[in-house]
Amino acid sequence: MTSTIYLLRHAAHDQVANYLAGRAPGVRLGSDGLAQAERLAARLAREPFDALFASPRERAQQTAAAVAAARGDMAVETVEALDEVNFGSWSGCTFTELGKREDWRRWNALRSMAETPAGETMLDVQRRAIGFIRHITARPGDARLALVSHADVIRAIVGHVLGLPIDAWQRFDIAPASITTLAIGEWGGKLLTLNEITP
Image 1 (spheres, helix red, strand yellow):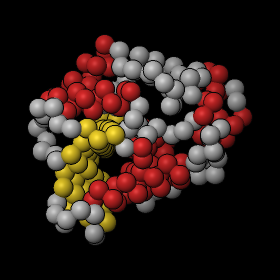
Image 2: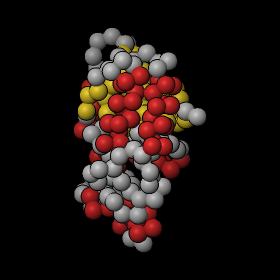
Image 3: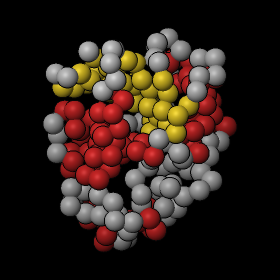
Image 4: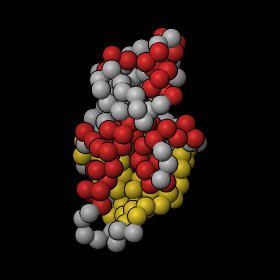
């Protein structure tokens, strides 16, 4: 029994390079992000999958909606375990502002030990995301499943599958609207593709 998991990062909101959206409300895709989501959806239309799950953040929901529409309005199941890292009071801050903060610098230097202002560590993030993947892949038979989430969440999942320490998060990129594919079974997990970007 083997499941194929498509890990999809949401498309880019307009200020993705300038500030930390986190769980701040109202962060939605602009026209460029919506076009990016449409390209991702067209690419995924070639892949057979049985279910679509998404983080509750608006940008993830919009990306999932595009993917669902390209497949004939497939249902989207909202999953808290796929939510963005809870950055607490850091959410909405520019990266310039954050770069001046010692707690932000510590978070990026040692994510295995550091906490966000909300008290979440990357190990917490990894635990909830992997727990959900274990849950959905425990069903009988082979499955092909698509999950729309966030860069750090996807990094945590991939790191777990590859046996990397949580502090290795900077060793690979997860771009907006990218596809990372895993095979998961009773035998373990395997990375099939990493950070495939739809032109």
